[in-house]
Image (cartoon, rainbow, N blue to C red; front, side, top):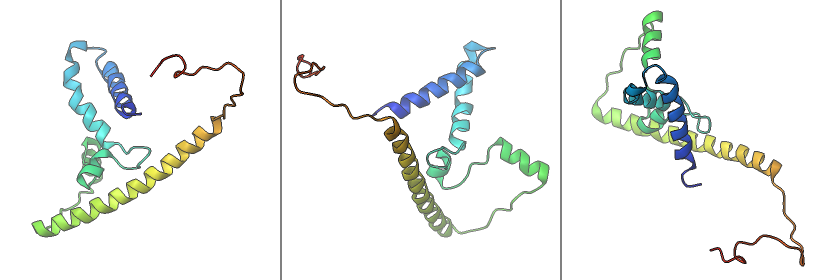
Length: 140
């Protein structure tokens, strides 16, 4: 369970690199930063927040967001704040975001437990019947 998340992410990254590098396999290193950016801007299923948002307290303005603003001419004017106000506001946003992400993570863990419990079976070991025991065979 220690490295499961890391291994899953690495497998996903390798799959994306394989697809992008089909035409120019020797240029794979040029795709890593855009792929990492794309991964970090997409909300995760378990937390419902993007990793970027959990880290920085705001949504990322990727290329699609900027294009949409240009096409719809819906450009938000930045609010003028002092540094102190900005830091306080950022802290509040981060606290709220982390609290909501924690709640969503608990819900996701509950769903995962439910799916696991559906297929879990209790094994009955009876005295006198042969069974495999790693400790009995000298494994430690």
